[in-house]
Length: 314
Image 1 (cartoon, rainbow, N blue to C red):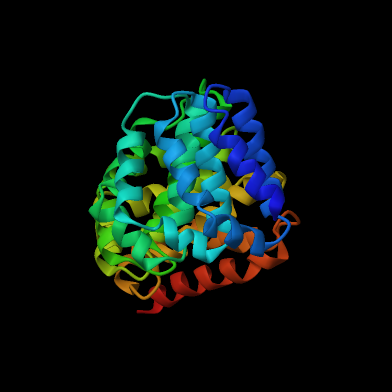
Image 2 (cartoon, rainbow, N blue to C red; image 1 turned 120 degrees about the vertical axis):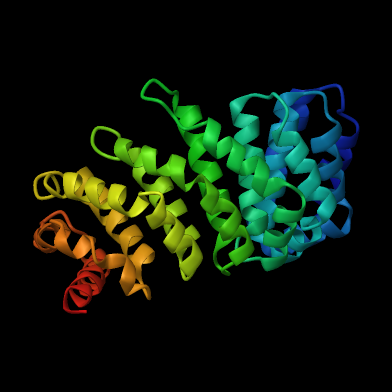
């Protein structure tokens, strides 16, 4: 533990040497990952507070980025660290930070920190709403959808934003945040047309966002249907299902969409009437027999078929 104390002192005397500070930060992360007690010790000696202030005050992008990454990593490792960072000041700073121009990697790390703070944390979800973080994340989500020529960094930023929004609306369910997020459904509906080969990497972020936002929320489910989202989802699923038997990536995309479809219609049979007449059910039956389907995903497919067939008899 003395190593952590010495590294903290080194950080304080290396303010003009960003390379040395970055290396010291990475070393601290490496040590703390060995034992949760090290995280608690580092917090007790003022390390978390210092790193937080460093992430705000440093003029070096690589130091700010690494400091934010360290805070997120330690918060993920230890609940007491997470709760010490879960303050209105932190969320307001992150919202303000994300509104500024900065390198994509730094922005992604800031979003990653947000996703850690809201994950399985109702107080974090609430602070994300009151501090404008949800509003800022939704703006990033809208304006950073990766076009076919987008870089890997752009795709990763957008996917991380989706993950942060998912953590803000569910596990535990947060209806207020769900209702804020559902207003981007008209745009998300148009993105569904892109979810097919050769761009399977878009499927999980889009499907997770839709699924988490509508889960156990009749108002969000109904709104998704009203903007044509359910029709677009079923059209995309039908298109991908035709490829699932001979393509593992297509099967993976089809599975993600199937789970999303299930979240959209569960406990709301009135929404299924149009789908029950489409080609979704035959396609899902074919998906069940696909050699590319993960056995762990079979139950989700069966449940979705059950929701759809029940609607046929109502």
